[in-house]
Image 1: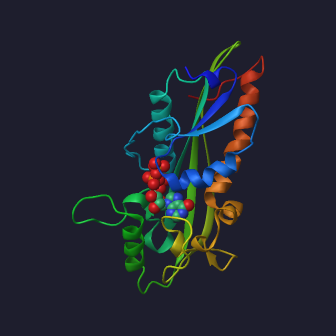
Image 2: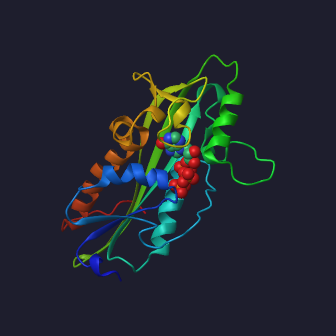
Length: 233
Ligand code: ITT
């Protein structure tokens, strides 16, 4: 068991996507002096989770559960925080949605890079007038907490979404994924024209993470209450 884990709570970011980690870290900094935030890389963990579910919520839970199983016994108080995100385009009936990472068909069967997906999206949207779209993030939290009062475990999900439009061409060089073609309603800018701090002030992921932090505080308070009611498993 890791020495830091004795009296502290570890939040483990259950994602292999470094761009997401870059955005989530500042949102989770200083949430509590007794919480440490780790990404998989910090812990020397490499794990591929097959996203076999058909919903963002289902896949987020798969990722959180896989990390908790993988790290079982390493921390006394551990919470896996997984993010599954999809871009939902109205004129494509919500596609690519849960398949956002695997949208562009690739002739050689390799997984598409961000750029392949963006190119394919712009192709599919050629001549399309209705360019409304929504970014939606579901955060899954799975926790295993050991304390003097006994063990406590929980699963919880929450989400954040932001509406915008798909631009006619790429604009901006920040961010990742579909950021250069997603113009956020009310800003006149794509996410790729925003710094991480600006994107974090309004993004789908930031809304979901803030909600997750608030919910987590309530759950942890419950876990330390003598009459606690564990959340559904
Ligand atoms: P993990 O499953 O390891 O977390 P992933 O990249 O597969 O990483 P998702 O399935 O949640 O993550 O994301 C699907 C794709 O959606 C992702 O590969 C990006 O292309 C895109 N995406 C996710 N969040 C985004 C964001 O904030 N801005 C732009 N594109 C994003």
